[in-house]
Length: 518
Ligand code: 3NM
Ligand code: MG
Image (tube, rainbow, N blue to C red; front, top):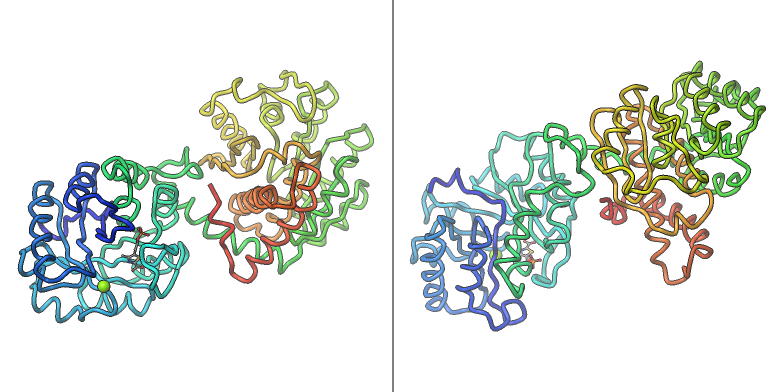
């Protein structure tokens, strides 16, 4: 096996401590893991005597050879030499790379653990074949780790590698398991250099069925998360890039405090204004169209929400839409209950015909009602619409994509899964909480949130819209999980708290909340 051809997709690091291995046999675990698809094995045993290490390593090498998978030894060049396996993995506290290379020669695989850019740079210059980037997440398997770097840390390392001349492979390690493997791979995608794989200990060694665990992890490593469904391969970079932009967009809202001009319905004025304040915007609830010209000059965004449409209201919307279009400031349209009555169908048509709308946001039936052939759809009330059983997923994402293509804008269709598209890629987002559906106005407030994001970050309205959705829906999740929240009533104030807290955390660089993006 040439070392350049080694596949690092699923890299197993062994552990012989009873807390992880249990009463299983290390050789049987490794063989099962190889059957499950592990592509590289590191024998890591910090306790055994040299004689025992060599004996086990020899047995393991016989097994890995059957599967044409390399065996590397943690720290111990002497053991690697004794069993003539493919190489070693060295940590920052072990012997130097130069010493290891001298002993093992050019054909050996030598990997190095790195947790800072300096260590990465040294490893690359020293001729490492791959780096183990860590520690990604805190893990009981290794409690003396120096740096928990998170996915952001991994991304920084990959950007460094992308910009460098080095062709060093990379895996990440620390707390990787079936709940995060797909996300970690996906979010660690840089344009030129992505992670080559993930390294795990306990997710396989401590599993009751190591073969099944390995098989599952391999599938996850190769499958994009729900966030990225419907994304074609050549557009995958864009998803990772958007996720990377989210903190910057939220910070920009905080710094610019953009005006969110709401022409919204009577039911939600108060909560929409509070939501705008807590995501960092400056709200004005102004339903009189004559005001729009002056307000548009202030550089914010307009939300037209036709939840309690009247003939006079409609004329006001149209005036405001014109004013914002003329000032080249963004507009969000929320066609509340668009399919419910003849009046609303007609109003939707007039608004859509009267100007350019940057973002249309609605539930399934509202969005369908905005399409040229969906106008006849009957809807019961503003909160209800065809359930998911009326449309299949492929059809729904086709509907939103066609509408966005037609209008050259962004369309957001909310539901258990939200779809966001610019007419090219449809992004599916799985965040949110059912309490949002039990409180009036929460759909409308999402429109307000998106207006704040696109007003602050007009250079990338797609990313801004997704940032708004993630900020809003993850705040709902965090609020619903709080101990003091006992139902939809107590949820409302907690939700405002969490909108605020996400913003302030993001401003100081704490992005733990964003790990929930799915
Ligand atoms: N090295 P698990 S973390 C062996 O950060 C090792 O360098 C680490 O175990 C590093 O997959 C680690 O069970 C243990 O979390 C990873
Ligand atoms: Mg070590």
